[in-house]
Length: 280
Image (cartoon, rainbow, N blue to C red; front, top):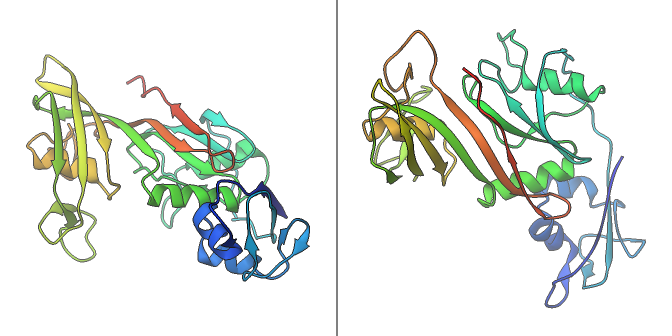
């Protein structure tokens, strides 16, 4: 069983334990439902969700056991860029999916991490990268850490920085604010269109090469599928070799999740991890 203990602080008054678990600890409604009977204690006493907490109270949460995913361990190289008792961050190589899927027989990040940890577990990737995108994947080791990091992602408290190689030479700095939606129902391809969801991407030109291509640093301020690829193509600078939004080439596009900053799920300390791009 997973157990978590926290001393309440920074409240202006009393708060219902249910609201505290949701707003302060970031637990989802479904996760709260699994602990609301006899699995939450205040100062050592079991309580229901109607109970209140105040500064100085000690909350103890016990999460019931869960079945691990049947992820096959595969002894493939994976670079660990950060690890503690609650989270692990890896530098995913290109051409590696994050999670096993039907019809895919490639080794995945989940298979590699399962082998590294040496025991079954539930794979909780806080951020997902496309198979051809390299860089940091943040993984929660337990349900509580996962719930808090998923909430942090939803609240836009996780900042991501990417590197990309694009066609042509864009302006030295730009902010792209354009809505994105599926090109058609059921299609994987996305387009900029008025009926889409708002998406904001900031970029900065880093360097150019002799072929007229550019290396840019990209900060997505929202997190939509294919957002960087769609937005850079929208301003006339698609990623080089982007088969979906640019010109198909012999190689795949270069997009690398270079750094990730996030509040630690337990200590709330701001953690920043970075990963070197592939040598090629």
